[in-house]
Image 1 (cartoon, rainbow, N blue to C red):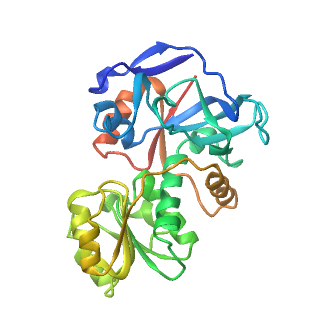
Image 2 (image 1 turned 60 degrees about the vertical axis):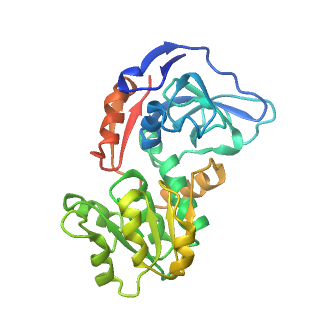
Length: 316
C-alpha cells in the first residue's frame, strides 16, 4: 500500500511517500480501506518529536488517527461488520507506527463503528478524534448536566465545534471564545454567547455573562488561557484540559475540581455520536478537503491555528 511516512522526527519536509505491506487484520480486528483521514494538532506534535517520550513508537511511522472508509476484510471472530460497510474510527494504538495517512489501517473491532449514514465519508473523517474528545471531556470527566453553564475555549476549532454541539445536546448553556470573524459560525453550532478573546480578556466577559462563574471549563488551549480560566470556575465546578495537566493543588485551594483527558478509542461512543448526527442533532465541523499528498501544508496550517473546523485529507 501507499502511505505517507516519516523516518525520523523533524519538520514537515520529513513527510514522504513509501510503499509498505498492506496490513492483515489479526483476531478481533477490522481492516479499513481508507477514503479519508483528517488533520489534528497531535500529528505535527508527533512528527516534531514532542511526544516521543509519551508514546512507544517505531519508524517508518505513519501519522494520522482519524479514519473513514469501508471494511476491506475481517479478522477471526469479528461479527457485526461485513466487507464493504462504511465505517469510521479513532485509530490510536498503544505503539505509534501504523496510522491513517495510508490506504489501509487495522483496528480492533470494538473501536470501529458504522459511519453516519447521512454524511459523506470525507465529513465522517472529521469526526472521530474531536467527537470522542468532546464526549469524554464533557460527559465523562466533567459530568455536564442540563442547566449547567460551560465555557468552551477555541469554539471554532475542530474540537470546539463538536464540544459546543454536544454541550447543547446535554441541555447546557454554552459560552465560547472565538475570533470575531468566527462568531456567526460558533453561534450556528448552538453557542449562546461568543467572546472575542482578541478584543478583551475573556475572563471579564465571562464574569459579565455568568456572574456566579461557570460549572465547566473545557480547556483546549492550555498555557495562559488555562491560567486565566481558574477565576471563572464556580465553587464545585471543574476545569478539564486536553493540553496541559491542570494544577490539582491549585484546584483544591480554589474549591474546584480539575482533570486532564487524553482521548481513547471507543466504538460505542462513536455509535452514539453517529446516531446524533443521523438525528440532525449534531453535524460535522466545517471542513476543507485536500489530498493526502498535501498533508505537510495541512499540518503547518493546523499548527498556525489558521483553520476553521478541520482539514480533511482524501486518500486514493
